[in-house]
Image (tube, rainbow over all chains, first blue to last red; front, side):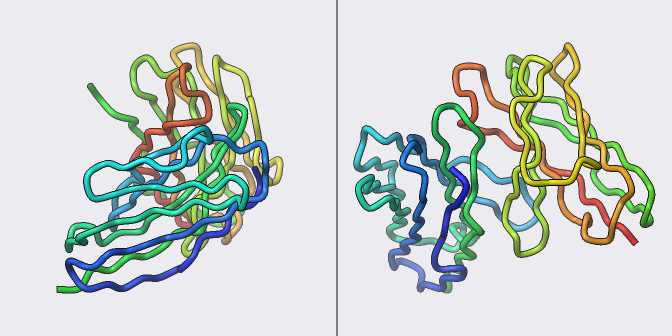
Length: 111
Length: 114
């Protein structure tokens, strides 16, 4: 895939609220969709991923949903905490090819 | 188990110079990926090496090149540095079972071109 759009670019929520970040892709061959979290000054780390044969995946407070027909996928964070503050990147790939990343969302969780 | 390691952590060069960045993947990982993270531009794919071969290349000029050694470590070379090459260069590795997926990133090399 060559194009991944990510929205919003910045997101501010109150502690305890939910946060949703959305990505759209263009390559119908894409079949793997990970999300990475990058805290300030640190390396990006994989937090959750989903494959195209699954519509939703959940891991504690984070979940990812995939709509292959509409070519979009979303990250949902519930009960946000200050340590969730970071830049989040979506990505996609198909056929064992390279990962293409979105432009990132700066999430700020305010007390 | 050691993660992906990169060296140096910081580098300052002047326009026109050449630079070599180094990366050691996680033990057992055969694939190494290089990404450029310029301020506000996200992660731009540069190069992908697997089993010593270049598998894919991003939309960067030929002065960006690299190689992978038999021990799966990798080098990224940038010739004729330009001001816009200033960025964080991230290396990542993945296991053969997850080619192009489940990337583990190093801490990066911050390159400043003056």
